[in-house]
Amino acid sequence: MLPPMHARPAPPGFEDLVERFDHVAVAVGDLPDALPLVDLLQGEFRSGGISRRRFCWAQFHLPGATKLELLQPIDPDDDEHFLVRFLQRRGPGVHHLTFKVGDVAAAAARAAELGYDVWGLDTSRGRWKEAFVHPRTAHGVLIQFAEFADRPVPAHVTLPWVMDQLADASRRA
Image (cartoon, rainbow, N blue to C red; front, top):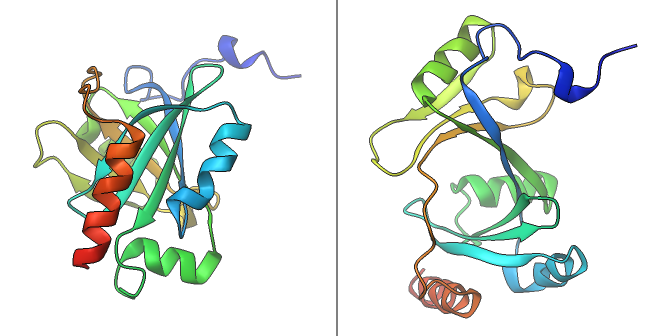
């Protein structure tokens, strides 16, 4: 019998790398249509906006200190966009799991040392650094390592503001 999860040591080399599980991200074709699920799960809006990678995201606190993030592509007709391709191939659903790390480059290097296919390492942005473990080597799950500082969300970032940003970006697409 395995010891309880909290009693298990971290895998070798990850003892000081993974700070916590941060959120699950779900790809959706229409973010407003997914909001009833957030209500069912008793989610409270946390943050959101438009990514420089041309998608809208909205993140919600769920009971139990975890978060749910909804991702919608700005242009549903852009067959080159990673979310559009995901939705075309799989339909709406879990896109990735995000783990907060203290050093994304070290986490990516350690994962690669262990034989995982790591890609998309981006340390160019000051606030958000990330790397991904490909699902083909992670038992079918896209894993995101993210290095970021926990900070308060600006007061103007509300769900209606995010929906307005999405509407504006979609009109321009």
